[in-house]
Image (cartoon, rainbow, N blue to C red; front, side):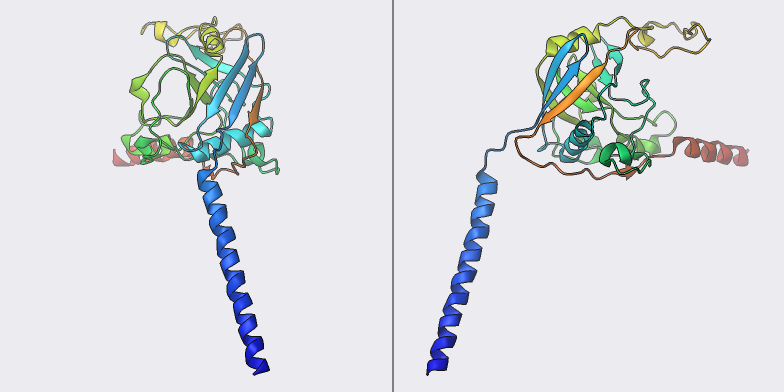
Length: 273
């Protein structure tokens, strides 16, 4: 009898513990679902221009936001530039090479010494990601990417998944880009700064170059980069206020080897002749 009573007490305690555990888990889930989480804010300080504040949207493009936050927190953007500015369109920056040709590495992202270049998957409708319905309207921040479709229409996936660190801020509504680029936030302060940057004096405007004109060159005979400000527009820093939330480390992809593809492409064309 005494043994049966002990077993019964243990059984009751076990049930009570299970009920308590379920209660704690349920409470945690409830709190997570009902918690009013503020979106992270990126503060972009631009030398001689001022401050641009951007609200990031992890609910629309979680991996992209994670990537941007990680790079910013590592100080990757500090000292880089807005290397491409087009009034009535957008301003583009965040390239380590300073001319639109650079690609970030795993080390830039994690600080682990791994110099392997990486890209992230495009979180946009054209790439099958339907959660992100953000339009390319004035003030939206989006990821810049490569476009290989001029080589082959079959390279759309490689194009959509080629973003790394470069971003652009839309200065004027550009509906033609809707669903084709990953928008991941909006400017909440400093649109006047965006306007000033967009109207900076540049080397030359690609849109103004006539078909019979050659690309302008510098004093060393090197071709100038189109739409690049004559005086560097430097990103002093990008600081993130995440309100205590952890947005993790982004999933990365291997970069598309464009030059290797071209070699194989032209080699196959020669073999067909």
